[in-house]
Amino acid sequence: MDKLKIALQYIMPKHLLSRLVGKLAAAELGAVTTSVIKWFIKQYKIDMSEAAESAPEAYASFNQFFTRALKPGIRPLCEDDDYIVHPVDGAVSQCGPIKEGRIFQAKGHEYSSLALLGDQADDAKRFEGGDFATIYLAPKDYHRIHMPIKGTLSKMTYVPGELFSVNPLTAENVPGLFARNERVVAIFETEIGPMAMVLVGATIVASIETVWAGTVTPPTGKKVFTWDYPTEGPEAITLDKGEEMGRFKLGSTVVMLFAKDALEHFADGVEPKAVTRMGQAFAKID
Image 1 (cartoon, rainbow, N blue to C red):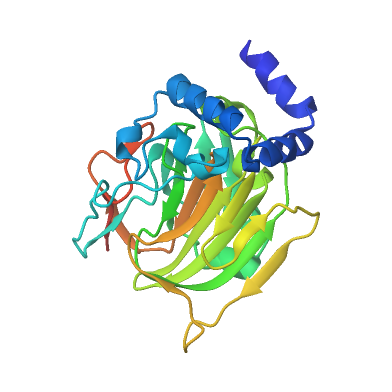
Image 2: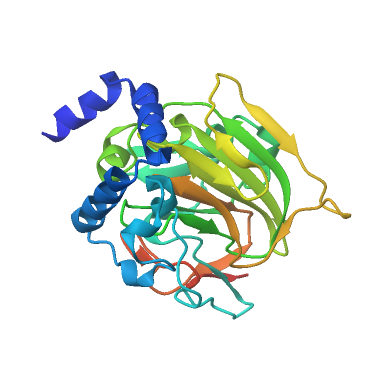
């Protein structure tokens, strides 16, 4: 069955399917939308008591529900300045050192940081010998992405690619999964050096957004696009630790890259399959 699921990933029209789902998710269909939301809550056992608005009827579209805000204070932020925090609710897929420019994906699979960053050699060089962490967001999770540490945006790159489903099964069976899928790379300058936040698309991910650019994808294309941003002056975009930086409309994965010697060690309990909660301690700063 697993082999069949993987085979279907290669042959089905993933982009077309994803964009169709995206249109439906954005549609405001009244009672139909409410029924779908109620089904989704029941199917994935979503705890709506954490949501700022708990009633399914309060959401005009499925996208509004999926990117719902949480109640104030429901995810307390680790205030210890010696620690960066989890950027999302989800589960750790992998974490560890970047070895000779390679990132561990799953047993028997790894990929290059250069490919992940859209073949931007200067960017990849900044993370040589550093650390990475990959966090998977399940359908039930909160889908806003927050800053692990205060940072100033210096560059954003849109990288076209596939839209394979992103989950433990595909991570174990699709070579270079995160460097093959469509993604948005945001690089921030922080007190511990550069930090890359890579937002990876997947099957039926209707949209990837950032707070400074809005919707980055769709539309899609076949070219890599880059945007440079000033890191000083009134137009600089600086986001505080814990501040929202982006959203997934339907879930996927975040890959974080850190420079050499930026992190001393990951926090207790941060390991593959560990559940993450936005705002909790993630890693100690070196």
